[in-house]
Image (cartoon, rainbow, N blue to C red):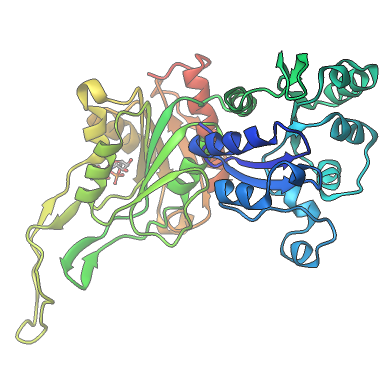
Length: 406
Ligand code: CTP
């Protein structure tokens, strides 16, 4: 999958430009967003309107357009992408890239980028075989440019030989291979719970807690960055949806459990939500009135334990289930007991006493208990983002065999 990946597709002037439309469609089907940049000669073969229709994004084409520059500078255009893909890449654009020319928007973006570049050459067989093209391509490869295709076959010009642009499927596969090189969790599915839950008292009141959802959201984002197809089931938070993550918003613990069960099967489950332990035995359908109630007693009943449910889910139990133990005293002792009681594989223990500022704050000091519960890892005080990165890497290592999962 290419969930959340941003591709800047540069379409240059070759008859194969029509295949780029299909490539855009397939890249988007895999979850990527595709922004197109069309060269002047590319526009002889495919129209900006067609590219805009299939990409559902504005198409960029003119370096000196005042409106384009004010909306999205040519430097920003390449910086905002995860990969620049030139398809079709003519002999001309390969030559211009080799020499570092920057006389139109495409070459300027290619020269200004700090991201990697992939090209799908497409040209007549004689142009492909010409020493100039061979040498240009060798130079580009040496600089780290990725090349997909070309294939041999009959050409639009009537000749037969090498130079046909790779098929859209082959281009998409090359893009996926490129991203999976730093995506050790590619092909794996992950589920993360995050945030508090709200348990209704009546239509306007609820029981909640101080969880901000920052840690859980950061973990979902970190797992997605490592390539996992990630579902985040989040209670009410003020946070934006993490990039590349499928977010399911819920309010109560019962809804959170239902959303988690709907996301199965997954290989990785991280329960970072601060799920309310209790809910109203029966919430009121109408707003409760103050009049005549000097004191109020609410009857609560226990909520389902999502972590314990996932840990004992039989055939659909995730291979690695990770819980959090938010404690205010005897942190490690309570965390060990919690791990055993709930049946999860790893537990991340943290001290959430008021003085630590962890609950609702930006930093976290955690202890990771994996298989060897006598020897927890004591991590230094880190930002929640860094805790998430480190945890996601540990998860990836456990799947690559570097660390035993359980
Ligand atoms: N958890 C859960 N569902 C619940 C309660 C907790 O999934 N109904 C998960 C949390 O997401 C966390 C772990 O269980 O991963 C521990 O949560 P915590 O609130 O510390 O544990 P409790 O079982 O509620 O224990 P206590 O509040 O008594 O410490």
